Length: 434
Image (cartoon, one colour):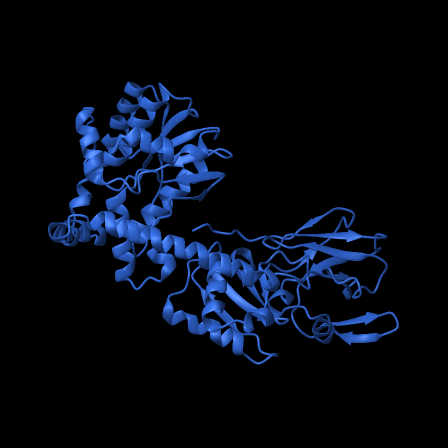
């Protein structure tokens, strides 16, 4: 294989990007990738090239790696940057380090820039086997995508169909030194065990095992793209007609989903949840069934890794981030002509004649009543029921009190006892890209 020609073909769609950034660990794959791109830049019109090294600080020997990477970049004339990250403690050190690394790489990208990483064919084969051993479906079996969104740009893995032997031959031919991470030999890590004990045995019996497994991952990726197209069609109707346009939460109407088969429901919900949360395993899909089949007046919740799905007003809603924390009580509003910031709950605004008297913004505690023109004194719970406000919203819906009396409910102009309207800009939620 002619590696430079292969890279030119793979990276052709991104030749007009404002910049290419190589995630340089100093190991074989990223060192070869950087060297080949730097050599190509001398004979081809390529975007500006730079490199970034993520320093996790997990082992003492890693303190020497930034200097190694800097020397390589100086020799190649490539701008270089080191970014230190802190790895959060957790059950999986590998996953925590990966999360920290990709967060830092995403933050380093400018608008429409491209981040290039060196995962190769053997890495893809290992990823596929690891996920199959964990019972993955089509989405997991698609393994690592060749490209995906990252930060303000795009992550690309241009070496996924290049075998390690090809990279080793390139490194030897060009006299490339590289870092050998001692943790890569530790069989306590699942990937290392698979690489040194399982994949070695597979290749001894089937020399093309890595290439064939990587090819299977590509087939799964193609099947996944077809499933995503079906999901997009199935979600289109379910995403229309939200009854509360001011509510910045992803939601789906239940009726269109319930007309689908069980398999298509799960496929649609997976696609909907993919940018929002780590997806549930097989056993946890019972939560979706319970949510879907609950009585109309029930308020079931399906708890997931990064948030929860609530059912209300014949819809399901994604709730995460600040929406899962109780807001602080209450707030005196001394200048109703100005916005009132509500910690953890957005901001409130008053539109209309400024009320005269002592104003407070509170949240519902239960038992509140409101006197409305022509309707008399009404129980707030009944009024919110009539308006169809989802239960999970009611506890953080701002209420305006004038001299201790409830006079307005945010974003519900019919529930205002005085001239004017109380507007609420709710907090948004972060959507995690996986």
